[in-house]
Image (tube, rainbow, N blue to C red; front, side, top):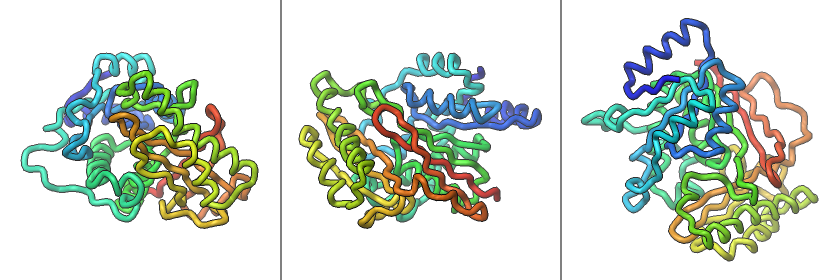
Length: 315
């Protein structure tokens, strides 16, 4: 495994891989790796010849009162986990390598960035889209692997890749959970024991609604109400919404298309997000091969999880 900190070094290393005809997979992270990140690495290794993991705490996606300065960091541990996980290259640039002096060009995402977290974190997805765009240009991977827990982020990145003609496959990997159901997140380390127990109400809310959906319920208001009843231990609840999985607009009743039930809430001072995908089309015929494909595949992880893959058209 190589650890590279400069764009020039990264391009040199990847030129060798491409000359050898190797398929490159890419896992963008902000470090403080956990089993969720390692699941992305595992998925990349299963589908790629070389896996690049970036470790970069992106300043442009943090608001003025958010946790940029205190965001957990442990680079030596991250480096060891990557080595043990079979990563080919760790790309760990300095902020000045990503945002050189005088930097003033940003990627402005559209409607997908406005609901859900976008309503509570102004500018967040502008920073996400910009840094992912830059990293995709730096790495130029064949496929990029993202976690379903960040459902809206996946949607924004997928739309950006389509709109800007990135010849890359976007692969979303199911959320990895603790044994008790809590979605893995680098921010979980902020929770004390009491807050950690309260945080479980988020996954329980999602699983309760999913169980009702699997039993045949298709009314949006009913499913949202079921989830909301379990969220009395968060403060504040930012949102619990059931949205169309492609557009992120409010889902229509009765559900007939894949939809994401999304939650964002604070527990103590920690903001947590989670989701489940409810797919009435799970047994429907595969879509036409003449358009980019969106496959929703049931994948039982703990109580319920789903994943998606979209093959991006080459530019």
